[in-house]
Length: 112
Image 1 (cartoon, rainbow, N blue to C red):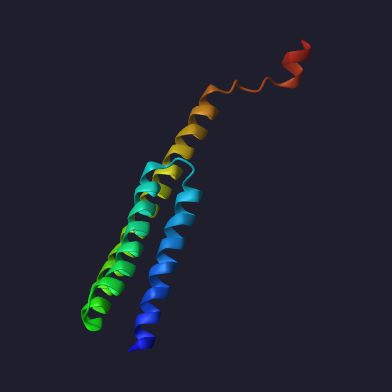
Image 2: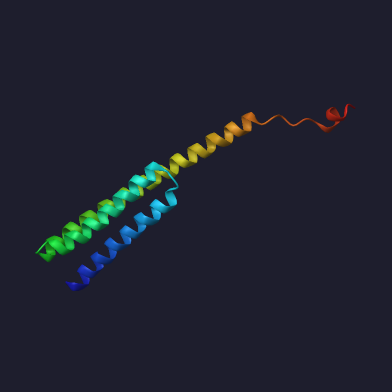
């Protein structure tokens, strides 16, 4: 049973670290920051469940459910942020391409 509890503790800590890294890489993307916040909160809640609950079996079950839920939360919001970022980047590229002046042929520019 001790190996299971230590495994759950390690997974919860990894989830907190992953949420921190996602927050750091978000660069102001609100969608990714929501996912990162949920991952950090879920990881901390998993650790609290392992410590507070008196029955180790119940603690492991609660920690598993919260860890998996928080991991899925982080994945979903990070994907949503990435998709939104790609769409914004493509829109900026299209706008920059439309605003750029058309190239003038060399012969016309020299007056020939």
